[in-house]
Length: 231
Image (cartoon, rainbow, N blue to C red; front, side, top):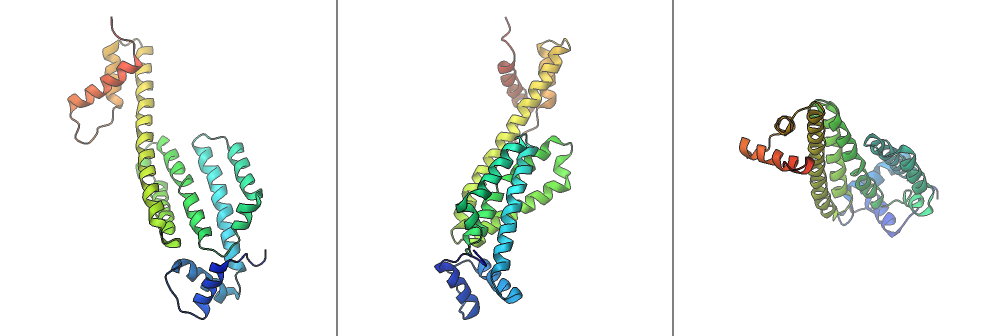
């Protein structure tokens, strides 16, 4: 297992950066990492050590990110330890292979949005510096997917659709939670249906192309689900 596990592709990478020529039928970025490891340390151990460190950090980050959105840390920790203990993923990490950083980048596309969504609970979260950093990190992860595999753009296209759908769904759920809390608070305070409607309007976020009448109709539709029908 030391300094690395090799495949036919691994030999091709080494030949690319030692005897040449450099070609683009494999990841040029990964060839560059192979070249850097060979020229900086004289071997491939530094590259596989970096891959192992990156995979370990990604698993630890996933545990922390999912804990922030309410997933019990002990369960995600057990999952992470299981992945490390299983021979296939453990040995995969020390291959000199472009698919290793590709998988790490693809994996990170899951916990990064989870961390981003967890910040929505804080006030003024769009202006939070951490939001910008996480968006930049997500962009780098998607870029890595594209650069480590020639067909990575297909994965990025699918991931982009899923991420947008998840963010929209989370925004709707967040609104419904706030609407439910506002209406429940109004009713607990002795307000009538009109008072609950006013409370609902107070938390309804403005939407593009929506006038006041459409906004009120949207709140009324939600109230119809939350409140019993008037006799």
